[in-house]
Image 1 (cartoon, helix red, strand yellow):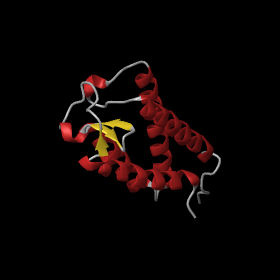
Image 2 (spheres, rainbow, N blue to C red; image 1 turned 120 degrees about the horizontal axis):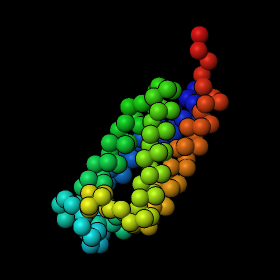
Image 3 (tube, rainbow, N blue to C red; image 1 turned 90 degrees about the horizontal axis):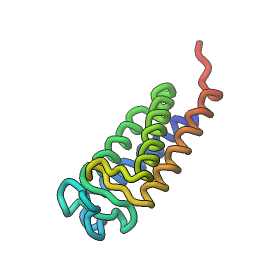
Length: 138
């Protein structure tokens, strides 16, 4: 049976991998490219008409997803993944809210900010909860 932190890594690994792949499908991207968005125009806009993305944003989603898929079988690695992703998403939320757009490298809009906050909270809560559910060592 997997610990919740491992389930988190697996489920979010699958979700972020799918979202990353979706960002490479121009038919799923609508609207104008976000201001200053770097990368190919055909891969910049709003994924599913909601979330601001570009090539680099999609690559980031893909990497986060593939790492989750790579670590979910290991409790300790899943905990590290949850902590690191939680911190990164908390920072992305804060920086996004104050208007940092990383020079167009990772465009963000309000739906992105909300998703970053929710993701950070989920990951950090599960990380801290996992300290109590650590598997017994022999």
